[in-house]
Length: 140
Image (cartoon, rainbow, N blue to C red; front, side):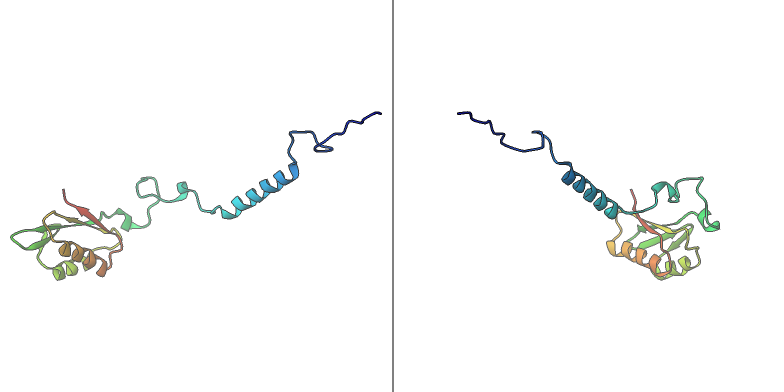
């Protein structure tokens, strides 16, 4: 009696190989996923920088320095220093700020002994008169 040897396992494929069709499908699905989810934004090198001296300037407003308002406390009274002006009320400060150019912005420099309400009031006054670029800097 002659016994025939039977081959068990995968027929037509060598052992240790993977089918390529499902792998190609997965690769294409991943490619489509990444193409759809990527955001198409301009490179950062195309964005104009104010730090770059070679960047184009728009008009004469770019040549102005921002105004600096120093808020100090003197004799239990809050004073607002803007250039050579020494103001004691926010209404006087608002009147003076309305006359200044708004494009360059304003920097509010607050000393350590000033109440928070006074600092917040100056920031709000700057916004109320039309400044869009308002920065807060604590005095050191």
